[in-house]
Each structure stands twice: as structure tokens, then as C-alpha cells.
Image (cartoon, rainbow, N blue to C red; front, side, top):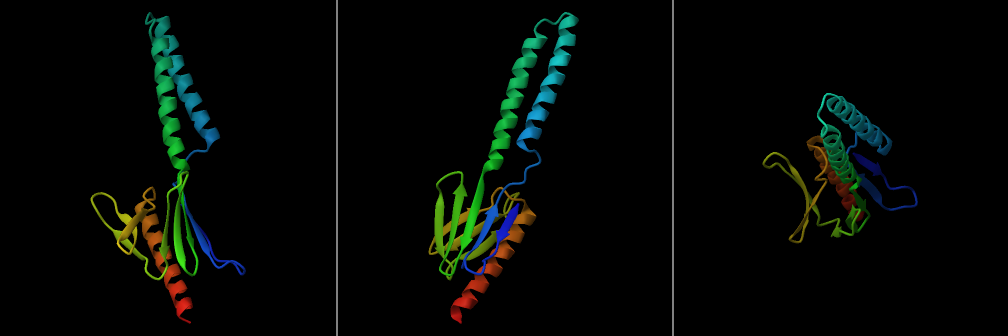
Length: 161
């Protein structure tokens, strides 16, 4: 998901937030895990009633493993990137984390490379390159590439005037 906050009257910079798409909220995730655990435990109780005494233990272990795996996958959706453009620089900050990169707006180039299975969106300048939006879909990366090129072109034209 790409959220663009254009430059306002008093602020000379535009900000883009890149976030992965999420299908579930935290509440929905808890409901899903609860429903899956209830189904597994119900099936295990029926199995124990028919003589399989280890079924409830297996259901508890399996439900815990599934809940852990779904929680890890859901937390991976917390990552995001913030791209800030102003007259002199383009800054990319990865969240959560401390990775940050700054490029001069005049020299930075946006490259959309197609590769094996997925494309890459790269910012390059002075021998450095940075991949952005790795968690976005192909269409979103193409849209981000177009938006960045338009914003950089506008900033460079304003600078020339």
C-alpha cells in the first residue's frame, strides 16, 4: 500500500509511506487462531473419546505451532518504509529499524528492473543503490516508480527556475 502526503503550503517536502497489504487486523488474527484451535481441540476430543488418548496433546502442540507461525507472519506486516522528498534530498527510512539512506534529488535515478520471478525497484546515485518496496506487489512497485519519477522531475524543474 502506498500513501502519498504531498507537499503542503508551508512544508516543502512530500512524504510517501510504503506498507505491505494486510488482510487481517490484530483482532481478526486472534479470532482466526481461536477458531482454528477450537476446531483442532474439538476433533482431538472426538479422537480421544474413540480411544486415541494422545490426540488432545497433539492438538495443543499443533495449535500452539500454528498460532506462533501466524503471529510471526502477521508481525512481518509491521515493516514499512518512509520516503521523504524535499528540494535537496530524498531520504528512505525503514521502519521498524534504523536503516536510513539519503540521496540528492538531482542525481538519484529510479530504476525498475524485472528479474527472476519478481521485479526490483532501485534508487541509484553515485555508485550506491538501494532497493525499496520489496514487500509491494508488481503493480504497486510500478506505480511507486511512476510517482517517484514524476515527483523528482517536478522538484528538478522547480530547482531550475
